[in-house]
Length: 178
Image (cartoon, rainbow, N blue to C red; front, side):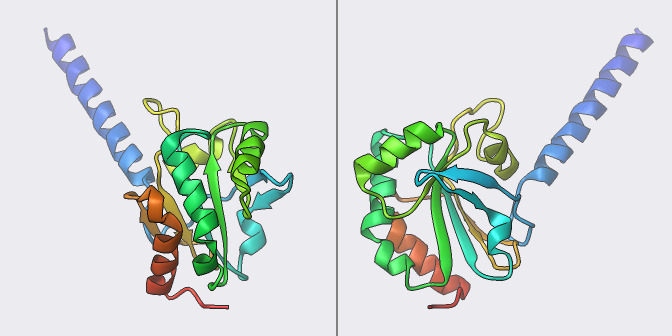
């Protein structure tokens, strides 16, 4: 019986440690943003390090190309892009779809910005938008400063007004205008 109790205590300690590690890894404002190097729907590769010291970055994750909510969100980025382009910012939407599917999706919407593909979900996992239980990204948007640190994480994205909402948040965060 003592051996069983000791095993249960050890198991509880391991679970508690794992829980602390998982929560410690959750990104928040002020944290260094995980680097990425992802293929865009325009055939170019985009890396966070390319913007270091030059420009803020908005990375808007969406669950799945060609689905109703994701279509609304990506259309809002295109239709409301003028508001975002007033700021010194590079902005992208991103999913775990293949580069080919995102290219077709971008073409179907005539986007004027790149949709990034994280087909192996490694970057999405680093950002915490996918996990063991959820294989498609949460609809979260990351605002990253020129210094590579996360300025804000929007976990309550409104698909219809996302472009306008991003511009308002950029202003609120003090991202310089062009």
